[in-house]
Length: 278
Image 1 (cartoon, one colour):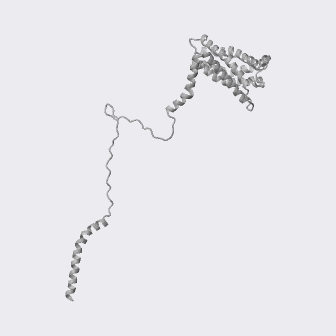
Image 2 (cartoon, rainbow, N blue to C red; image 1 turned 180 degrees about the vertical axis):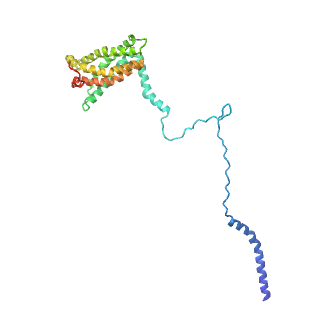
């Protein structure tokens, strides 16, 4: 019995001894894995190299790079697009008009006057009788007056002013004032009477010429003096000679609107303008 116990103790001790080196061998690994609670050290990233290309001058100093435009999905009005809009809406019609003036000056000015008279009368019809139908024949009569009378005679009149009134100094103060005075005293007075006479003849009522002149000549001339003296001071002084006809017709649209309204209105403009009856 005692021998058996000693044998078992010996065997057990041998087993423990045989397992001890393995435990000793594994224990440091387990301890290090369990007890290694320190946070891992941060390893700094390597510095990035600046690979951008820098322009340098002759002295070796770096030159500033041009600003890089930001990419955007929006459609913006670039200078090229703006140039295209201006080219199509302004330059093309303007160049065509100038070409027509050079090729056929008198015809172009007469047609311009015709368009101005028609447009002015249509505007007057709209504001004077907004609910009535457009009187095509009335607009046609005024267009005929612009084409056959106002355009050709007006063109020759401006040529006379440019030729004989201070031609060596055409934009001086004395030249501008003289041209404006002659235009308003001579041309405006005569052409106002001619306008009413021609319109009544085109309407088929020449017997109404004197009646119309007595009723509307003075108020029409007074309305003329409210607009055209200032318009011609600007025209003769600041507008280049090649653009004066175009400028004159732009002002004509506003003036002809009022003129057509006066011609076909039944209002007593003497009382409206506080003018005495003669």
